[in-house]
Image (tube, rainbow over all chains, first blue to last red; front, side, top):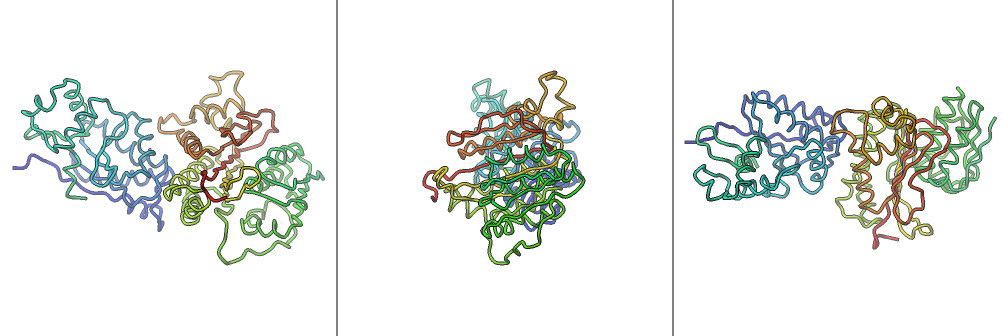
Length: 193
Length: 297
């Protein structure tokens, strides 16, 4: 029986940019463009119900400026981080070296964090995170799934257990409401990549 | 009529003096004498347009521009799109050379920036040409074109979001053989808007009290990332441009109103802050990116 009341979706940002600015290129530049793309993403999320997981795919975006990193990544995460009636989870795909700096800066300005694919098959926490959160994320990312009964063995350090709780609170880890198991978001979107 | 003779070399080092003389002309109609100009870079060209527009707005009439005698300079101005933009800014003879239709050596011709679509145009235009120039002439990695595009995007957005008035951007590569012994890329972005002081005044002037000036406004934005927007995600553009320019050992200076602020490396002797320039509308940004050691030149 699955313990995942989630049906992850993929959102191709490059495609949204082309549709938004009617450009042959996939450059995510200028704040109004970023705002329009974010609103298009939010429209899709509104149809997904109260719990969602989205793979925001930046792979086809060639240029991402700081304004758009702020609008499309930071403000998207920020908006749903503060909502209690909806639970929106995000994984950002295609955050290669060309985009990493812009996204890191945007997340830091808002004291946010996000799960990002920073190299093919490699997922990292970007933005502001504690040492405990980083260590908990690394363990979960390696295992993909952690059951409650494994917690004491895997996280003997109280700071790391607290780090996992913070990751859950920040919606950077998915806790199954059915079994209580913790899922790495990267594994839950693997079939979309 | 106020005659303003332009120097033989119309580049960043000459720009402040030219703009100051135009500003001092006040309401007197100007004749800008470019006959002896032998060299011009994007800063010189865009400053000429800016100065002409300032004079036009103050005098209510077009200033006269005496064209350079040098056929090379005329041809280069034409290839950079200067004369297209000079329509409505200057009155000048129609003996300007027509722009060729063949391949161009221009990195980014003079492009007006009035709306966000113009920023997309700029970023689209430089993709192919900038990549080739940055890697072959400056020795930058192939991916540098993306950071270069981000710089252009952010400086152009600065016009739209803060100036609330039109401006121009241009970029070109040169071999600064004598000055630096290396190739450089020069980016110039200028606008006719309300400048940093005007943009920040409502939100920040009171805190500075008597110290509020063009210089303190520039310091607030350039060094501390202050912006008129309360959103904490704002104000990153200039900060991140500074960081990237520093990574490439480049120079960036911004003039706004009567002050100019800069972040320059050891090869540039521009002072970090200059005050007491003639008041001028808008802001004028100059960026110079040098070749890495090992780059061509």
